[in-house]
Image 1 (cartoon, rainbow, N blue to C red):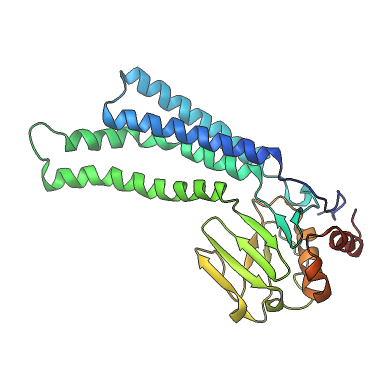
Image 2: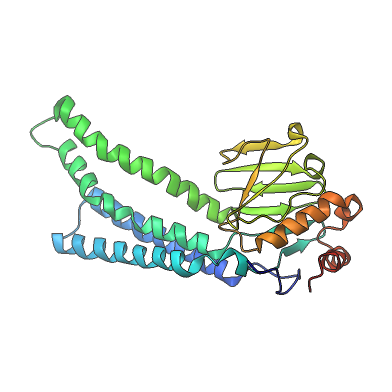
Length: 274
């Protein structure tokens, strides 16, 4: 594990790759919704069309997901030493563009439900009459499975366009927005001298001394008394992020300058980066 050596905080915009990944999500949504509407309403012209479109969508999804797995997520110790200075009072660790590509790949996997969904629709449209209790049960099973898959995918799409996951540093504390929930952690809630550099590059455990100050909403993945920052989709060096958070935990007088040029300069000097 190497120490941070790359560029320091600067006034930068989120990477262009974020906008591209969002366009990929939109394109995947339009394609999948149009295809599923046709399949459910009137059906594709022939089995050949069904096979061709289904295979094309699935292969493209596998290519995207494979790229995310191989190159979309940087090794944690090679991530940049950089935060996004949004403006006075706000430093941000945005989501990596790879998160948007992941969601686009998941959306493109929708055709895997085509066959069971088409069978369920045909069963419910049986010209000989209602299918009976067993028939309704057989028709409901694929619909339920599709809904259970579709719900988290929809929530992930919402997360992409809601700039999630991300971590915001403000004069009041941390605001952690995860895929399905968020937490507000005042600086006063964190133990002095923490967080320390940790061996894991996948997460950063925060030590809390006043858990009653922490506010949370939605679904979060760690307890209030021991909140954990999941770093997989955050393009920042784990040790650098730990150093930045510890700096503001220990230096109350510097919090008001978060996001300002002077505050950023002092932070960089204190951490010996730049």
